[in-house]
Image (cartoon, rainbow, N blue to C red; front, side, top):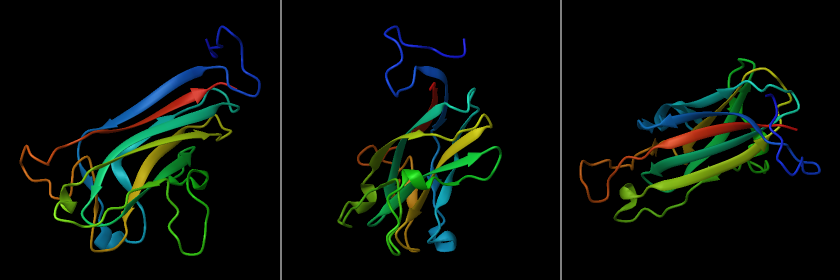
Length: 182
């Protein structure tokens, strides 16, 4: 079976159903290297997923669930894409509009550094329907950056990461991509 069509038929202008699903689960932690890479975004190591569409007309529904933290102020995340073995780079259609020198991002947090700032953890959910128009392998990832060279972004942990059952813990993050028939 190459296409799954809903029993009620294909909706006008919509897709018919899910052809295939791929997922990556990240349970280990990761930290940006802001001192060396700022202001560039850094791909989260081991947090990418690849799918080879059966049809060039298919759409790809990308859902990412990211647990992360910042030690101070703000962290930014972007959805990245690569097609046909090319290096992944920012998927501009999945970010805000360009406006001067403002950061284009898919998701962010904002915190004021208080007494427990290093204990905060955030959860971002990304849903993006992509139209890559290809039957070559398509790869998606999440890239992150801090707002300054002095602080990092942490995935699946908080900034302090102390060994305590009070405010500290470890999370998991996922990227799922579904091929949706046209």
